[in-house]
Length: 187
Length: 187
Image 1 (cartoon, helix red, strand yellow):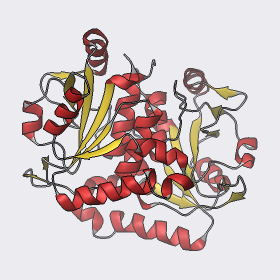
Image 2 (tube, chains in turn brown, blue):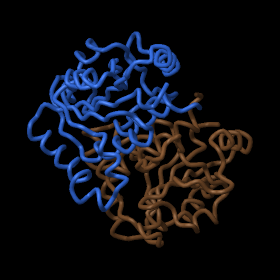
Image 3 (spheres, each protein chain N blue to C red):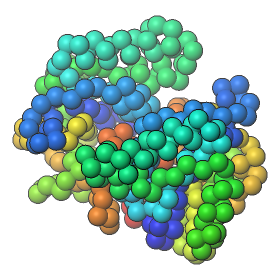
Image 4 (cartoon, chains in turn green, blue):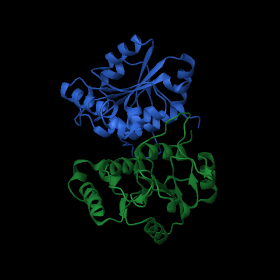
């Protein structure tokens, strides 16, 4: 399993709100930075930020450009390297097209904080990845998690970061870090 | 190794600034939330936020109280449970006193993003913890990392989350998540 056989997608639509209805969430600045730095540290291929909302896309592009082509990159070259692999897209379908256009065969792997039937364990997922040798897009939901339709259109679902605890409420930033480390670390 | 044999300390003084000088950093709101949620999810004992600055201590206490005794806890009971284990203290010495007063024997384990001689590997640290059975305080630095004096006063230093990458620039939030998962997960 090579690190650059993995990309991350952070979804702001379609996600669930507090009432369990499908809608969109606002982009959080630190999600862009933290997950870009994580993806770059682990040598992942791309970090896609998914939102179809024009104002949100504009905001994300302003942040990415500040740190890559504008003055932020001169002040902090490490941040530039991280944000160079970040890209805002309208939808998961656009991620599929982008990867296919670049010669990759994308496999969608949504994550969940709530156990679902047919979830793959981390060990199972690592085995699948090393056997199939495709390009895996790990999909993370913001707000109250990914809408049901994302699971329906996906290839595998990864099990929650479950613990022997009555409490499982990680932020998407820390959950993404743990999941990427579990899939790519030898431990 | 029991989960509640571990606490986390997030240090805002003494830390290094960009020039490598010792000073203090400002508290980041999302550090309080993300690391409290992480600590609660993994069943840790306490999450200490370390700063001697009165205005910063006031800010942290306002945030903690909003989510524990004031209205935030009613709106989001899960957040309340997370922030109930968070506490602001002046110094690492205060953490030692607090734990000793509560019958724990604290062992200080600072973390670092840069390899240091005598660092313990994650496997070594897990072995030490399960043998000694003391209370371990994992210490994380903000800004450009912990000042040298913290390492001098500590028992063990944990190795960096190092990867086969030319790039290792995780946020303290994601580094803390990976480190806690590596120490407490069976994988």
